[in-house]
Image 1 (cartoon, helix red, strand yellow):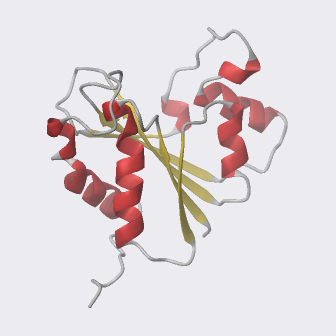
Image 2: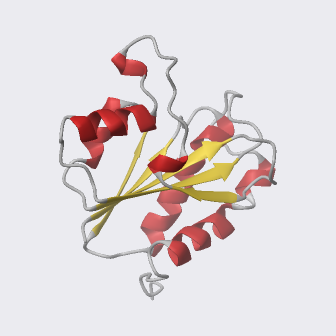
Length: 159
């Protein structure tokens, strides 16, 4: 099954970059020929372009609900997310609206999309590093993704 693991966010806004950090850690640990890795700051319909041709896509992104502790992971599917009707153009569609648009146009979307939303504390401050509380949780987040989605298969350690 051709799989894309895609880290979302903006790498210059502290915790918003959690998807990028997790994908880079996964890239070092998982070497399966059917699994590809990428990171992006794109959103809306432009995300669908990146998903084109994959059977499964795993998205990793930041979420700030303040209801759970920093580093906790929500495992969601597109249908679990609310549809936003507040956009100024098709360039600002949220993921769910973009997904629905792709389905209506019968684009070849992945059969499976899983979203790992990571609770963060500060996704808005300009800075290239994660907050300390979140940075300490990266190994646990990586393990969660490996175990829940990729079956724990990882490359043997380098000799």
